[in-house]
Figure 1 (cartoon, rainbow, N blue to C red):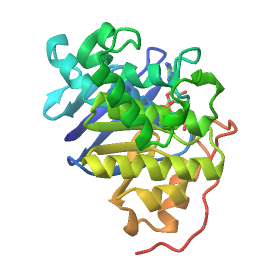
Figure 2 (cartoon, rainbow, N blue to C red):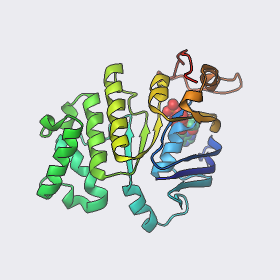
Figure 3 (cartoon, rainbow, N blue to C red):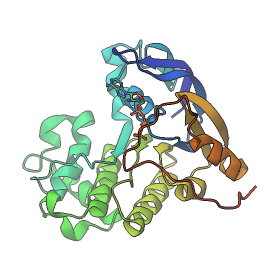
Length: 267
Ligand SMILES: Nc1ncnc2c1ncn2[C@@H]1O[C@H](COP(=O)(O)OP(=O)(O)OP(=O)(O)O)[C@@H](O)[C@H]1O
């Protein structure tokens, strides 16, 4: 699925300009990682793409359909093609793992087809196959909130497989996980999307993962494009400049504030 962001601006009702004239494209099957300091507009961009926020001006197109101007009839099938993996796992915790995977069918097939009690045998088998792909078939009957964070993120990936999504929007998918679980989830996510030729747009705070997994890195600073480069062409100086806080610039200082690592760029 092709993503085209053209001169996108998002101003919140209180006047905060979260995105300011942003343009870039993602080709079908491409894996792009978005980087930038806290508050630079990454989540706002993802929210505009998932329909949680409306752009103020500019265009945001998925396969040529402008999300801000599309009718509900155009949007519905489009949304079914978008798989989401978020930092907070967005599971129904008191339901089983299998049920959460079956929910992936909801957009395309409706509530009955996606409910464990009424789903077809084929659907339940497909959900088990998706769980096998993420190595969690043995936990299908478990209450989802008893799983570790890494396991829950793998359930989210299985749900996305069930949904048969064409594009993955991942907003800090490993932010809540320890380094080992985070790596496992990144490796699984990327191998699944590669197998299926899916497009990926992934927000990360971990530079090492961004360089390793992203084919292209898009750096955002104050809602604008700082760089858009193949990951091998992004230098340590590019990264340092991206996270440099200008004196006039207000920055969030929550516990997710990123400290850039200094590695030699693989130019
Ligand atoms: N609903 C809102 N109303 C007003 N301002 C908002 C709203 N949501 C976000 N903002 C502001 O928009 C700017 C961009 O926020 P956003 O969450 O997109 O940044 P981010 O790059 O995802 O940050 P982080 O890395 O901390 O998640 C920030 O200044 C934020 O305070």
